[in-house]
Amino acid sequence: MSDPTPRRPLLGAALLAAPLVAAPLAGAPLAGALAATPPRGRGFVTRRSRHTVAATIARFRAAVTQAGWIVFTEIDHAAAAAAVGLPLAPRTVVLFGNPRTGTPAMRAHPTLALDLPMRVLVWADGQGAVFLTRATGTHVARTVFAPHGIALGPKPVAAMEALFARLATAATA
Image (cartoon, rainbow, N blue to C red; front, side, top):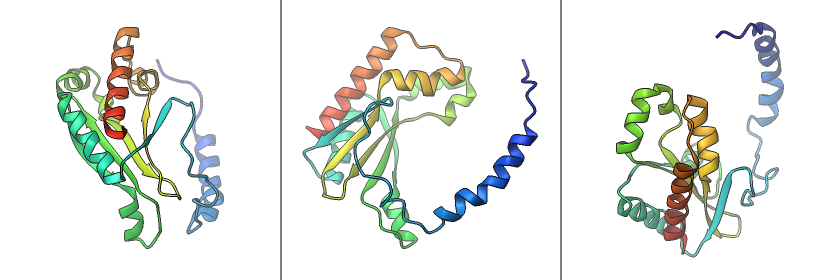
């Protein structure tokens, strides 16, 4: 079913507004404007780690492997920022998943590949405290699977939540 709502006026407004939004951000340090605090609610759970960023990532990788899943890659945002001369406290996203369960879902719903694999963020605040932030099972069901036409029932959501909690605990405890 197509949406009869015209899109051109919105696109035009967005194009006109883009310079107004981008100009103040170009070269502007957002770090001072945004506090480096763990998000509360909004579908995320943040745990403080007893380990360094590198050790937390290594422990997370080991927990993922132990669970029979794989780590696809890591994205080191701090290294990318440093490469363009900008400071950023450690911010590493670890992408992980289970091709045995993800592949059949992607076959049936190709656009799911835009939102998989799963990910966690390992980061440090300005005082050097290390955290791991992950999405809740409910958040993943609503924001990753549902937009692609996949409805997850309570049991898969609970199982996902339990796994994510176990992996985060193994990495941070």
